[in-house]
Image (cartoon, rainbow over the protein chains, first blue to last red):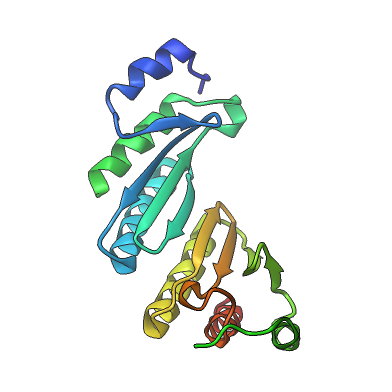
Length: 92
Length: 92
């Protein structure tokens, strides 16, 4: 899995417009009605992450969940990160 | 629920020695064998948190989970935080 160039990242971001690059990490904060709804989402993401064998950083703050995606082995953001971002958007 | 004094906090910490105060938050990082084990723990904590209606900050980093506990309404750490810390230790 090859690290994407800045131009490629900009192109991929068009498909997941709620996501942004923060400190070199593809990230999005999702808002829910409450903690239970947050956990439901996190478990959906966890299942997708296990299937992809690609695991986001997950920060749970009651009704808010922030996902952070980066491919450490590639030293940057790859197609795998955008794939899981897209899947996460569909789980909401 | 009243904010604990520093002396009270020091006393309570003796019962949960793996926890520490970091930036005013009662916190502990738990290590597991893998992401699935982390998620199993997080779901156990989430259930205890819902029952107590007291929700920790939860940061998942593959096989590591950091919990952060503080009682915002009380402006500090309370008995509720130590109660959930103790329960989390038993879920591991």
